Length: 338
Image 1: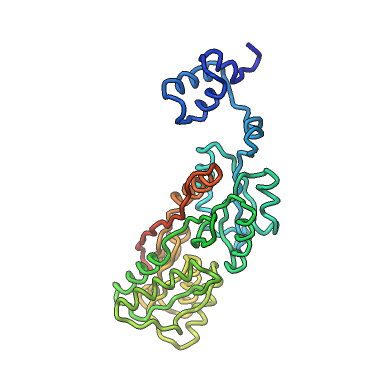
Image 2 (image 1 turned 180 degrees about the vertical axis):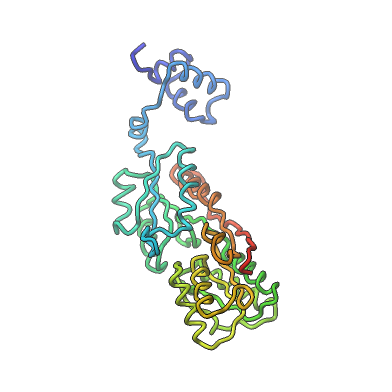
């Protein structure tokens, strides 16, 4: 025996080949349960640990996934949308459970993601959270696909071959949120959020909003829609613009919680009460939603499941398993704002 046990030592003790040892330690289904347990027990007895660097070098893999966040404008200078912060723990845990390290960085630090990460062997694949203007982001995704970079993104379903996304069913979420507002007796419902291809998730929520209004026999009023992107300040400004337009409304459906919280601040500044004068519903269920004044009714996105699926989808893509886009159903969380 050498000072440090090797897979060859385990193979000798177990009476199997070195490749069988490697498979057994990875819990490969190609090895019988009896042999797998025997190999793993011997490995424990010998205090054997896998030399991860050597293993990854043989496989030409880094054993690392890169999580690249879009730099969002935020009130606290963190440059990270709080919705994505709630997903970070789930992604980190899923990476660890699958034997991967996680590298976290910003997308905007480089225009050449493939060269900085997968091509330089820093990471075997990319998880992309956030995108700013989606029209510009989509061009970067096409570039990644052309270079056959392994990646998965959160949000809008991707159309190009070899590109995969995990996201919420935003059309259905928008419909449910608006239906809840209608069920509370409100009839003139404003929508705050950019409703165009520049923000496809918000656009899908707007489509669901329109579906619910039309199904209730009400009229979609374009003058009650105001563009806003991702921030409390954007929600405040959009609500102020709406309040200054003289168009009457008795409810607001905001495309995300931060927009909703900003809108409630604008309503309060005008002396309007939530929900007595204007009901407000958001989308995301960030931590702040439960501590706003009043607490915010919202559509909850399942960030725990989202993180797990992002990691699983990326790893499946890397190892060549079948991969599909997934839409996660959001859930209505009723609080005092509606």
